[in-house]
Length: 132
Length: 132
DNA sequence: TAGCTCCTACTACACTTGTCGGAGGAATCC
DNA sequence: GGATTCCTCCGACAAGTGTAGTAGGAGCTA
Image 1 (cartoon, rainbow over the protein chains, first blue to last red):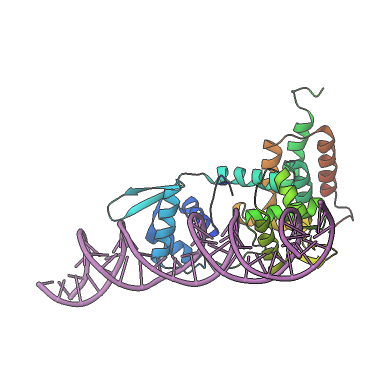
Image 2 (cartoon, rainbow over the protein chains, first blue to last red):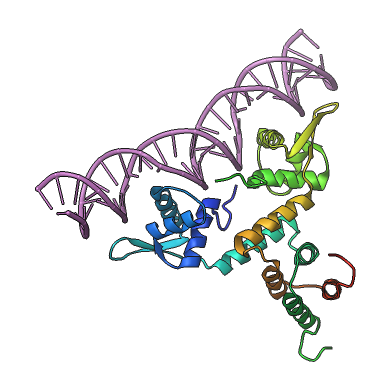
């Protein structure tokens, strides 16, 4: 298998999410957050995961007073885009429309969301500025 | 880590895709398809993968004349839904709207697609008696 | 019948991922 | 100053995943 762009396991990914939510944190804080989120792992497990993420370049660490503080180098947005792209290419032949349709069909939207969607789509419809 | 719903590796997944595209096939045909798709693996590799998929219940096999013929038990659609659900919960707090917005913002749509989207969203807007 | 070719059944092996434990240093508590 | 508490560094290990080789049977082929 060729390397995929972001090769993250589920546990590694969850660590990243903590860093996104909480900002740069030392092992201890990440651990506490994971516990709060119902994932009961050992301190050293988190440490190992963070180390691996660092080796892969997905986080960097900085020695502060007491302990190393880890920071995510990938933004959540970047990962979102990458994941969506990969989902599209793997399961939708790269075409976004079927996915959008599926989402609209199977998910519920609030009125505000519907309005926002309408507006965006109307703008798609009228590209330049004056609708042709 | 708790088991995810569909625990498929990338290579296993590609096998499934061949079965979806080509219908039930013996090892040999799957292999040929993979080669056509640029994945040069050995016959026995495909065989192993199919066997594992069968153990996991994602394909079933039937002895035919010459060789076992493997058929996917999961539909592409089912996997799509599951994958989308997991993407939403992992990266979008389970909310579909932000993903839809992102897709609309970053992908290109044909006029027909835009019209279809408009229509679907307009229907959402007027939930007269349809759906719900 | 000896040789190909194709199929199945096993076995193997390296690498990744999730999980920790222990050793040993620094700071803190009494 | 000895015990306790953290932290870091290493090593380990089981399961899962990707990849493939080998053995042995069945059928065609010259």
